Image (cartoon, rainbow, N blue to C red; front, side, top):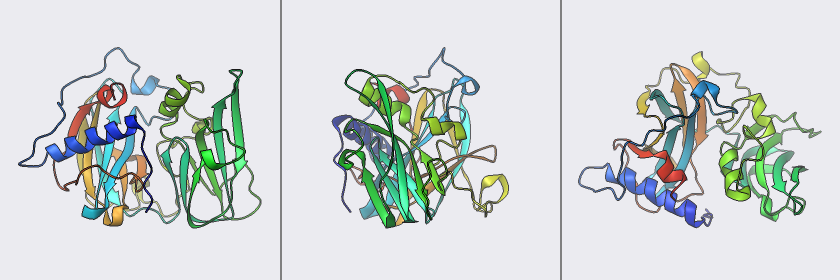
Length: 295
């Protein structure tokens, strides 16, 4: 499997998270100081714009294919501590994954895929491109930098996959919004030029990798309600990371709050953990601004 070459900031973030998780294992020492750095004076979960699922974000960090492990992180952007539940599940056969700000992986069989990307033109005007990028037979990765009609510095906001023709924007059989769209804007444009995530965010379910209608969903939108749930408490302004078993690097995590499905993300199979990752260790909590501001 081809690994993406990370930026310096992405690499430092990956090293910090992995080192912290390793440090929670018995007989090891974490290379990161973990302290209480709660945010104050910020908007509450109910007041925030866009699709942040009540101020909670679930992010796949990296995978260790040699040890069949993956790291996921949950960020609490609100002002109150939150107690959540999660479980690992087999990834859906059809899915759309945002590898990074400009790269999208589509798994399944589709006649076409449409990407919507945002950019800032030389004159400072905000531009938007809605572009069909081709069919998918099993699995295909689309890099916006390699697509002729999408500017190199564009950020992909949404992706749609179509099982049949015609491919009409907004009518995809499988759709997904970039869960890190605001952070991508800050990285590439220096500010958030489109508030509340991408335009498609108005449809909801932004932190889920796919917005496909699941006909087999069980109670509380959970198709596997009998499986045990793990409990996770994330303080305000903090990010908690944990490792899970991931055969061949592929696993999905579903995140719940009081029985309601908040998010579902698939492991970052193209993002390799810099160090071996143990499974079954306690979660590790880090100040969010350490991961998002200082690195």
